[in-house]
Amino acid sequence: MQKIIVLIGPTGIGKTDLALDLAPKINAEIISGDSMQIYQEVSIGTAKPTDEELKRVKHYLINQRSIFEEYSVKDFVAEGTKAVDRIVADRAIPLVVGGTGFYINALVNQLQLGEPGEYQTSVDPQWEEYLKENGENKLWDLLQVKDPAAAEKIAPQNSRRTLRALTVISRTGKLFSEQQRKINPRYDALILGLNSDREEVYQRINMRVDKMMEHGLLQEAKFIYENRSREHQIIQAIGYKEFFPYFSGKKTLDECVNKLKQASRKYAKRQLTYFKHQLPVVWLDPLQDEKVSEKALRKINEFLNK
Image 1 (tube, one colour):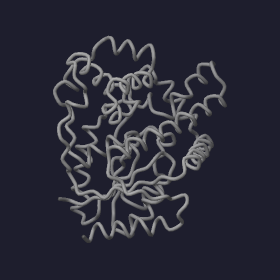
Image 2 (spheres, rainbow, N blue to C red; image 1 turned 90 degrees about the vertical axis):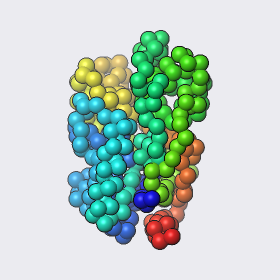
Image 3 (cartoon, rainbow, N blue to C red; image 1 turned 30 degrees about the horizontal axis):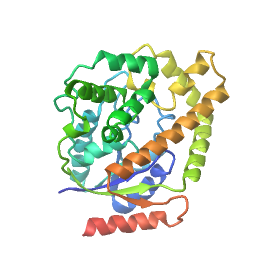
């Protein structure tokens, strides 16, 4: 079974910096494990590596789609497996880096995607109406009440999949999570996770949002807002929709920035919940441990040589 390295963690924890440090040392090429970095038109809100960083290490699954094109977890798995094959053919190590837990899990393990009753079932109108009236977070909260195990595997912003899960539950009378088939590993993966004290992580997130604002996040958000009538997934991404009330004159810019910081902190909490429940992670603390790179390198070498 092909060995790969995976580096995960909540938003703003320092995954990109550590990956760029490790990649040359282990002869690795990086596969983005982020569901939004695939899009060409947005870079700041999706925290893409800079052009300089992309030149330092070869990357895959970045800037390959327009925001107006469809992109799903099935596309990610198909393209991710091809990227792994190309990297191995280059005699390099695949290093998957990102924070979209379900996407990474689907790549590492052979999750059954598009099984009967999920993607092939039309959505129940009652749940579409519920989403329209209450929003994606309330919709996800409802799924969490009805089927906590299913909710753990679905990101709150993935309203399409939440709708499918609720539809399956209401039409079959069975939990959506019980209809998932047994998971089989696709790769032999060492999964390294970055995390630290919650308050320190939250402080880094707040600082990161401020930095994004300095680098032009508002301009990206305005582009998304101006194209909101066209159907695209990025419109629901954290980092953009929080500014819509500012553009419509309903809230001040400071209120929207604070809302984004709050949403980002909540997202980090959900990321960690998913990682801890769904993946076998070896945890490291990049904020407290100055030797985190050395420890990560040692664990990687032990894994590759066993």
